[in-house]
Length: 168
Image (cartoon, rainbow, N blue to C red; front, side, top):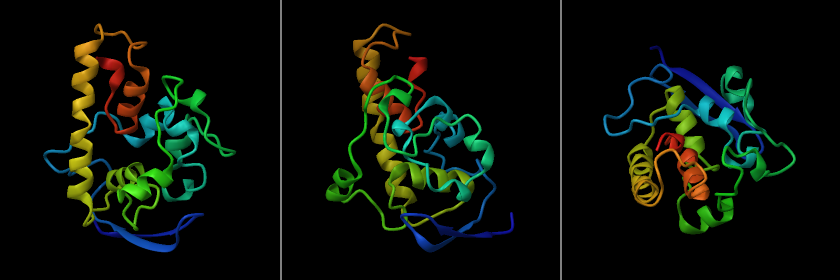
């Protein structure tokens, strides 16, 4: 694929530039196999619908056809499991988990990775994604298979990290 330059101008970034160097949804790191695409996550309902409400121009319009968005503010009722499973961005900043190139956090990094950006922060973000596997083990250990009412906050958090928690 010929690299494509992207220029971002939204509420959190003005004039940020990056290159997409691989085709969308392809050539992921071998140890990074998310179960859901950003488009699927947005359609299921993640982050109370707030996450992508002002940066749609950066990503394919098809991602937003069925997306559950709430431009006026976070609405946990839009989440697939109908619960709030998010910490505020200020919490993530305080913990030092936000890279300056992705001021919205992990999901922004993932959307850009999905679209073909490769970045210095990839290994760290993939490591964080893999750490969510402990939550899968907890859901499986404490819930009957298919019981989506069991541990809904944990299941919603897993959806936020591209794990399809409806399946276990």
